[in-house]
Length: 88
Image: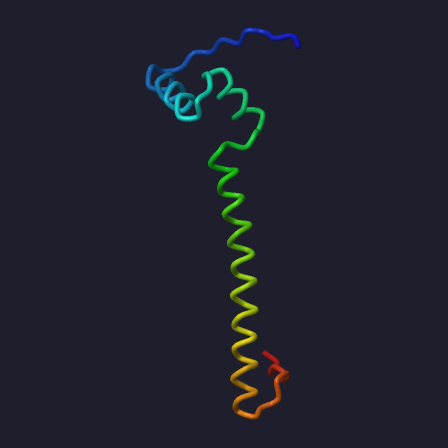
């Protein structure tokens, strides 16, 4: 793999920010810039995607539980279990 040096100017605050972000992720500043610019997901993004998937599953489970509960109540009241919904 061939590499080339890339040099750019930034404020001292920006340099400090890059160094702190790289340290948080346990990588070099160069690797941080490469990952962020190439669109590789960060640890936070990976965690967020996992949380979103878990939330989607939890919502589906909750919806099913509510449907089951409503069916049980309708059955206990002697109503048909599949009641047609009114048009909106």
